[in-house]
Length: 421
Image 1: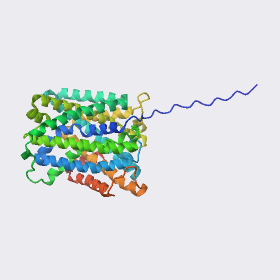
Image 2 (image 1 turned 45 degrees about the vertical axis):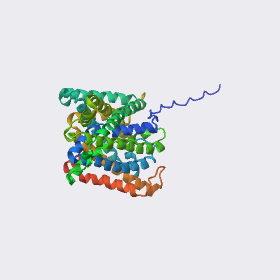
Image 3 (image 1 turned 135 degrees about the vertical axis):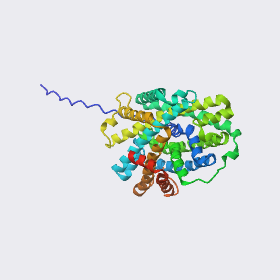
Image 4 (image 1 turned 45 degrees about the horizontal axis):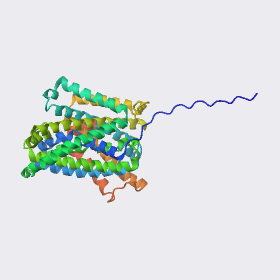
């Protein structure tokens, strides 16, 4: 009687993994959605108050140039990687686990504080027509409801989140473009001229607000583990994000300064400016645009922030619990829930301006990590698939600016950043 064949033990099912579903325009939309979030509807007034209207649009142009320098460093570094993590992976590979962890952690702090600040701005925007939303239980209910809804959406899947982000990105750009086109004929060019010279305290306060206003492009390489062709898509999306966002925000600031004399004192600057040259319908359109924009930004904050935690867990720098992937939806569900819970706590306890400055300080740590990593990779590995021209000029300039802005911050702002670190 022949011996029965031994059956081999069953192979354990593989752990679920993330899905590569994002193209270059999806990534660009994620980036634009993060940069043009709540800040473009609020910062025009904040900058006009701290710098004066004439200097504020010039500061936007200067910040756009600085952001492009830093963004090019992200584009070069990201072309070397295909996994989830962005600046965290860049710094970890270049300088080791401790430096990588600190940058990865600050990336997550950036996302959580930025999300909390923008959702406060969302409540303020709705308060233009519904003043009760600017304080009290109703405001808390709206903030909580939005965060819970976004959490559920992001758990459901990356493709669904990307569709929502794409739609909301188009929805936010349309009213801003109309605001600029219809406002240009009404500009008073005398209002665009700089007034008195600036001092260091003004520059320090405004630099952090501008870093916050332009911030968000650093999220583009974070979901690389869910991108179809990250090596080529990341540089395209990074540069495209900054060029599109910068052009829109500079034009918005020019129109705001040139058409609205009371800009510095406004809580809803774009809606108030639109009321002057577009009437009540224009104010309604910009209020709706602010709500759409900030909602889209909140979706993106949840998407990218949770991937920061997932990447840290994936590399063994946080407990494996944060790296759990939902078996059906294949999303980092535990990381999404944890990020959302902390964002909710911060949103209910802080204001837009306070959280924006903490977010800006933490961003500068992230920027410095990737800019320095570019120089380290060039010495170690030579040219990247995407290499910035002009040798070391761009990464050195970007690194100097990233570090220098920290010293323009106040002692209290630096302390807040140090506590987060």
